[in-house]
Length: 201
Image 1: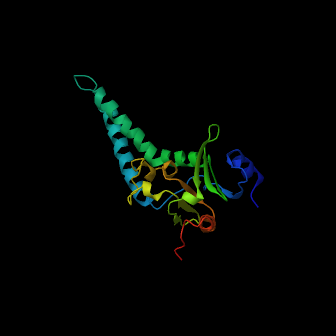
Image 2 (image 1 turned 90 degrees about the vertical axis):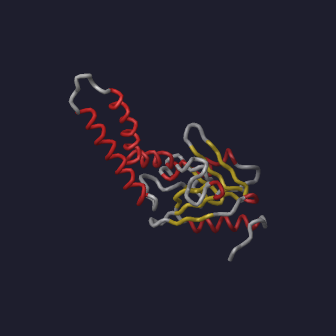
Image 3 (image 1 turned 45 degrees about the vertical axis):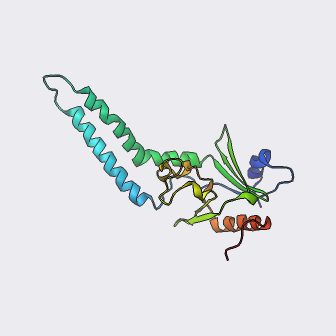
């Protein structure tokens, strides 16, 4: 049974006779990924260096020539970037996921992004590229529909920034959803009914 609220949310974007078969949302709150085993140590090194740099230049005694304001101001952007890498990116990612809604219909996959001003991503089932399922240790999973937009190192149209904030990825995807295999099989079943995605079983 699909929640009534979810059905109503997608109703304005449905085609005539189109039915919602599944709807869901990404995992809410702070979420970690396998990439963070590399990103967290790097961000701590960056943030720590930026912090000590700024402490040093702001507490260093004045010289006879006065305060070197260039050196003091030059370090502030690096400190702000360090704070974002260490803490801000997790809050940013959580805020974006809070405004994401997903649906699978008998004709399309739909992604709604935003709250007041909605952005709608719609992919026809009979035009889907290959699907890619990634399962996470917490039981959630991600389904990407546009895997060709990213290289094997994750540097796609966003220049790799989606490594830091996965919800900013330009790849059309269902990010960190519950029961990912069930949803994956549903999409494949519907795509097979159009006869355009061959089974690899």
